[in-house]
Figure 1 (tube, rainbow, N blue to C red):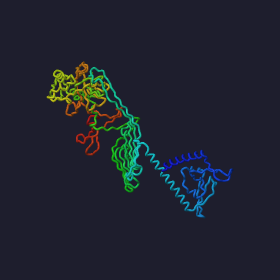
Figure 2 (cartoon, helix red, strand yellow):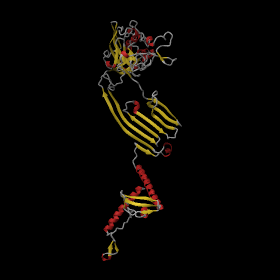
Figure 3 (cartoon, rainbow, N blue to C red):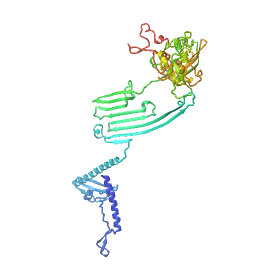
Length: 573
């Protein structure tokens, strides 16, 4: 309404100015009869086409007159005051500049004063309503912004309170895309395998979304790909706040926190679940169902050295990292290590090549291999098709006839593309691919820095644990009782790079505890997840979780072993 009035006033002012200019151009001063020279006198006043209310109201009619749109604002130093005279019961209107009256005061009856006050109140009310309507119309004319939206809640306002539905999104999104192509000029690889092209995608997102329905329901979400911890990268919370008289004070869903007033029971701040606060009179109840995403640890130091307790279960061994090179070394491990630190094995491994499935994309030292489980074994064989040599009890290519049969009767197995077809007749004897043997195209040769070899006890420790779908094969040479033995084929034995190597398989893609190869993986090595552990301050305790007491004890509740600690039972003390 006020906006329309402003437009009308603007056009009225333009018309008035044009009329005044036109009158001036046409001798606006009109001659009227009166005293003057020649019997005609010109008036010294200008007749106004649009009336203006006087600044100082001389009477009640001028004060009660409606304000015209062209009127200028009253100067700030001119103040109109109304005083009540209790003797006469009337109201005195004074117009002052400072403490001085600039006009003659006049009196108003109570009815006149109430009428003027009602007029001014109504005028202020409609001006305020017009300003609100104008503000809404301006906002409605603003363009739609998907990052800052606001809607009226309608009937939902009775449930969630006033405020409407609001959604604000802030943040930055940086997406990098590209294509990487690498080419390796390795004659051992086929032309299609020399070039590797893959899609490279990277993103950095820091976004915050805040939404609200009324003044009770709020939703917040933070997403930061550069967060230090994983549970901090995504933070989602939906919160409902009740009123003072509601039973449900608040309901929170998403990332919540739980604080307690006791030092014995500590709360946690990294929780994901549902939390609610209820009040029944003077009783306040807080319920929480969540998943904890953080962990707290206490560290103590003694003499400048950090001491940290570790608890490891017997089945939490370091899997897929430590392997015996053959059953000969596994069966004689206790005997060879019975006089530690002196190892009485008579074994010295002088040469070894370790091959694994190539997943790194590095083909600088790669070869096609075919790994056999029973290669080099004489006593523990998965298939009775291979004939062991009783004269050789230790592991060797001559311990059974596997390598000889494959070379003589299945020559096409050298071609990696024909291994499955060439060795298919062995299925009639229970020898299947993926169990007794594995073919690996472009297997990667590990560097000596990627594993640790115990050359006297005959086991291998990888720096990185293998995945379930990876194959591990070895070829090694060692001396035993003055004789030299070899297991598998070295890359120098087969100089033609496109022909496959026959190696000893220590791990296949099929993990079967019933296979003899399952026992080659060492299950007596545990990782503490620590480094620089001092042997002098290291203490080991072995405990048994008793079903009777429900607590760990350092002995077995058996009649003949209950008096001995488990350390002594296992010869570790």
